[in-house]
Amino acid sequence: MDALDDADWMQKALQLAARAVSEDDEIPVGALVVSPEGALVGEGWNRNISEHDPSAHAEIVAMRRAGQALGNHRLSGCTLYVTLEPCAMCAMAMIHARLARVVFGAYDPKTGAAGSVFNLLDDPRHNHRIEVTGGVLAGEAGQRLRDYFRQKRLARRAGKSAAALTADVGPARDRAPDQNSAPTG
Image: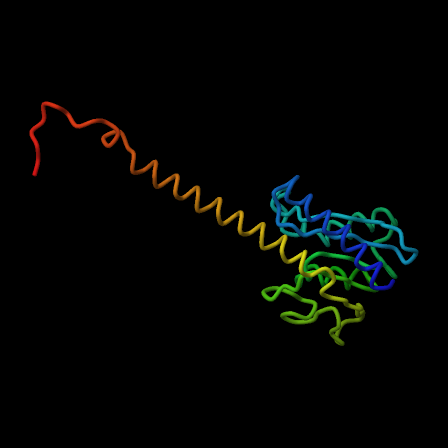
């Protein structure tokens, strides 16, 4: 697959990332698996919060669906596209699935296991190595993540501000001073 194909598939992964937010209020990460023949065989987005499943990252969801579609836990020759650099859990699942290639969008400087923090996908100690292409549409993928977390922070701050305001306006503070009470001071 050439760079143009990579950008096209990553654009589809970005659409899945948008669905993560709009349908499940999840972190916007989308992934899809493409067969060696160029057919879409599995797709998904982050669902770990909505499904109460710490393993339901976009990559895992897409690989599960691809395995079901292909009738095999091995995804030999397939390429996985994901909008965020895979974490260690997802990277090891990719190795076990025997993916040929992983293409990701934004780099993850905190938990990236495809080169940012460490590179599990090309570790010579593993019995399978995966070709990695990073940074495809990284700007757009990264911006979606920044926007999502900015909105979450603003909502949290607004919630805290509303809670503080409610606490300040209790029953005694709501009423006008009693006209018969003596002034203090």
